[in-house]
Image (cartoon, rainbow, N blue to C red):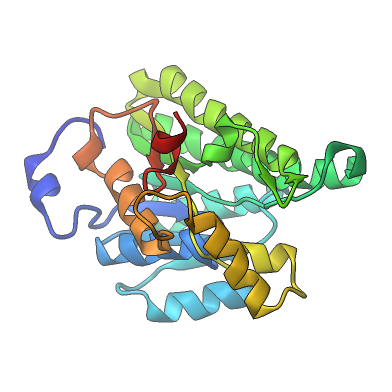
Amino acid sequence: MSGWAKADWMSSEPMRDRVVVVTGAGSGIGAGAARVLAAAGARLVLNDLREEYLTSLIEELPGEGHLIVAGDISVESTSEAIVAAATERWGRIDGLVSNVGLMHFKDIDEVSVEEFDHVMGVNVRGMFLICKHVIPVMVRQQSGSIVIVTSPSGYRGQEFDGTSTFVYNMSKAATRQLSTSLATRYARDGIRSNALAPGTIRTKQVRHFLPDMSAEDEDAIFAGATAPIPLGRTGTPEEMGAVILFLLSDQSSFVTGHTLFADGGHTAKLL
């Protein structure tokens, strides 16, 4: 996917027949990306820890032949299985959306080593592992585009109701740097790497972390998060999917090493 191809850029299906791996595809931004990419003609390899989420998602996607590889992305064998599935079916991987991430709310004196290792394992090691196994395929092709989903939290301190999200913030700073390092190292191999920093997107993530939270408390959390956003609303997973489509496709063929903020203007207001 090197160079600017006018036909692809103008196409209503700019990812037609391109093979894209999406991790964390079962819900939220990953599922939104899968919907947008499938509509753009991509052939998808979808990963999530929860197979039932993937099974439900794949039934609604346009196109045929999309693959499911369920498993814990922080375990290396999962990334190996994802890459094997893609290359055995299609012989290539044109795009990677590395999207898995856990939120975490605790102050530093309350966090156990086990909790720290778990969050960093999913948020950082998981992204390292999938990139480790996808990049050799892209190097052989001399083409490919990677989107790493990071967060504005990787740039700033952050608290919710006085409780820190420092572990999450650290992990997102690391993933942003991973994207930058891949961009400079593999540019001459025809591989682009960019990061997406979404703002507040209403997904299942908060409820995964706080499963006993009431609907009223969830509404209050998102209302508070929405208040400082200049556009006055949260984003949607499909809006993030559209940004991911841009970064994967030839529409962004001269863009690499960039972190794109899609946060309704929140970060701009803080600068």
